[in-house]
Image (cartoon, rainbow over all chains, first blue to last red; front, side, top):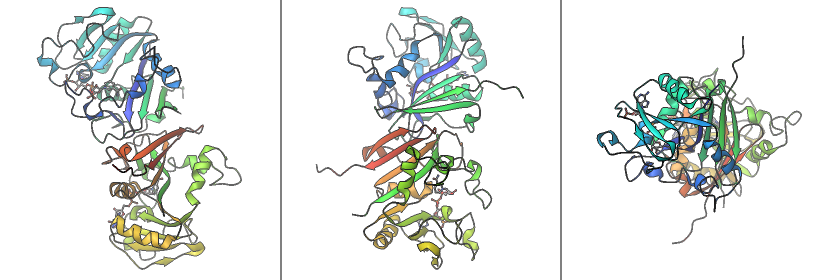
Amino acid sequence: MSLVRVHNFSISLDGFGAGEPQSLETPFGHAGQRLHGWMMATRFWDPTTGGAGVDDVFAERHSIGIGAEIMGANKFGPPGWQDDADWRGWWGPNPPFHTPTYVLTHRPRPSLEMEGGTTFHFLDASPAEALAVATEAAGDLDVRLGGGATTIREFLTAGLVDHLHLVQVPIVLGRGTRLWDGLEALEDTYDVEAVSSPSGVVHLTLTRRAATSA
Amino acid sequence: MSLVRVHNFSISLDGFGAGEPQSLETPFGHAGQRLHGWMMATRFWDPTTGGAGVDDVFAERHSIGIGAEIMGANKFGPPGWQDDADWRGWWGPNPPFHTPTYVLTHRPRPSLEMEGGTTFHFLDASPAEALAVATEAAGDLDVRLGGGATTIREFLTAGLVDHLHLVQVPIVLGRGTRLWDGLEALEDTYDVEAVSSPSGVVHLTLTRRAATSA
Ligand SMILES: NC(=O)c1ccc[n+]([C@@H]2O[C@H](COP(=O)([O-])OP(=O)(O)OC[C@H]3O[C@@H](n4cnc5c(N)ncnc54)[C@H](OP(=O)(O)O)[C@@H]3O)[C@@H](O)[C@H]2O)c1
Ligand SMILES: NC(=O)c1ccc[n+]([C@@H]2O[C@H](COP(=O)([O-])OP(=O)(O)OC[C@H]3O[C@@H](n4cnc5c(N)ncnc54)[C@H](OP(=O)(O)O)[C@@H]3O)[C@@H](O)[C@H]2O)c1
């Protein structure tokens, strides 16, 4: 069974997955790189200078056993990228996905084949429909849900996420896109574990509980 | 120098310090006792059956070196308690404060002397004014800020809190009174530390950074 997994999704203490405004100059708004500083200090990010501790152990799971990614339109580009026929994502010619990658957008366009195995496909579809396509493409492997917060919330609400790894960073953003809205009682269907790291972040893992028969 | 300290203030993953609706039957709204289950399992709460680990170490700080408490009106009683001349707080004849205790309310009433050293005083005053009164009463000891979220936020915004201990509980409440609103960039003036406990909660301590001269 192919799983739907979220990895390394970083939030502030007040639950924001990005600041504001999102723009070409500031992909994460006023959050800047602060949500991902913990990751840039891992071996996963930089094999030469990075650390190999608990942050790294969590971070590298991002790449293991994944056959496709699904992301939201606002992760793929700044507001208005749909009006730019030449926009090919933030990541240069060889994006770090290396699998079919499905971008959810109300304004789809033709697929983009990149170097290194990443092909961007654009879908205007419900979470369940998009997941069916991505699962098919992933074969025996899992599907990574890449964010942002809006898309993760949408898939959680639809009951489609098996494993959610969040990284709570010790900053208060105050504004941006918030993860937790509308997710009351998530703990009824997920086991929640928290592990604090010496780096100052807290790794939260939410693992969907196996269905028990009544 | 007398400090202003918050202890054992429990919040959900999404930052709520109480659920809704607050009422005589449900002081914490739909949160019930879930925000404080961790504390009820400590020796601080129950010397006979409680544990003595990290949760207990944090919990017992609540009582050490405190000479006065300040709390908000909604901690003192359910909505409308101001219309009940007989309301004397939730805690029975011998409340667990054992010091002068200042209740911030727009509808003050005469002071109430209880058993065990607690006297409730009712103040319609700014945070700074209330703190001046409480600090005077506390003598050489510290002032505890008892919550709820609205009152803590108000004192943080006024720059009056030295030490903030939060306990993040692995539940998503979805609604209630939220702690983090309007506190953008709190990390600029506080050192933040996170420690996860085997019980599943995360202890967050925010310690005001010593002022550095420019
Ligand atoms: N904190 C992290 O670890 C992390 C990870 C990834 C991304 N991010 C950041 O998060 C921000 C983006 O997050 P976000 O919450 O603003 O947005 P998002 O989840 O990336 O994208 C939401 C948008 O995707 C499109 N969409 C979503 N579901 C759809 C569906 N079922 N059908 C059609 N279109 C659909 C809609 O765009 P349209 O209607 O415009 O087409 C929607 O407004 C960016 O700043 C990004 O850099 C952070
Ligand atoms: N999570 C925890 O660990 C924890 C700890 C303590 C309490 N609680 C819970 O939190 C809830 C209460 O929190 P809350 O945020 O709703 O309210 P709160 O902070 O207890 O009280 C806010 C109210 O206090 C009065 N007030 C505050 N500042 C004032 C000022 N400067 N001057 C005059 N009046 C002032 C106002 O009431 P009026 O205008 O009506 O007078 C205001 O609406 C309760 O459910 C309580 O059980 C939780």
